[in-house]
Image (cartoon, rainbow, N blue to C red; front, side, top):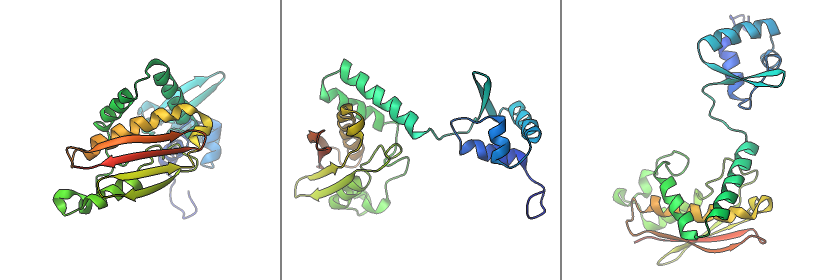
Length: 222
């Protein structure tokens, strides 16, 4: 029973615990995490395994349990993987336009930002303006928000014919200079997404200063 005198749903509690611990946990961790005995935890984990709602991985003498519905990946894992990926790309490919092409391909598989639809009031066919769209891009420019410990600063300067985004205090450059590749990829993502509403949109990396941790990107809509 819980504090309200209701029967506890151990299966639900275990699945919720696994979702907030996507790196995997042991039976002992689960028992402590949901405040129950190891025997009870083992019993319900076995049921969930049989229902294929839990997967396991053997690490030495330990068995780690994961929810099959987990969609969270620890930031340190994401960062180490992405850092290695960028280094590999940079070592094998030197053409910056190819980096941008990667971004355009990525844009076909994602919504901007983070799976959210564009707000209707900024769309040109819904009464929106170019200025609104420029500012919208600036507000959502940090495409790596899921691994930043501290998001960089973004300054948006809307000009007559184009807009400049100055991204500063980029702490990722402290981890690896190869993150310059990320911003060329980002320019491709932005250009492809903007071209859905402005067919002649053009996005360009104007400047990258790794030591000062600054990137300047321009966007021109037709």
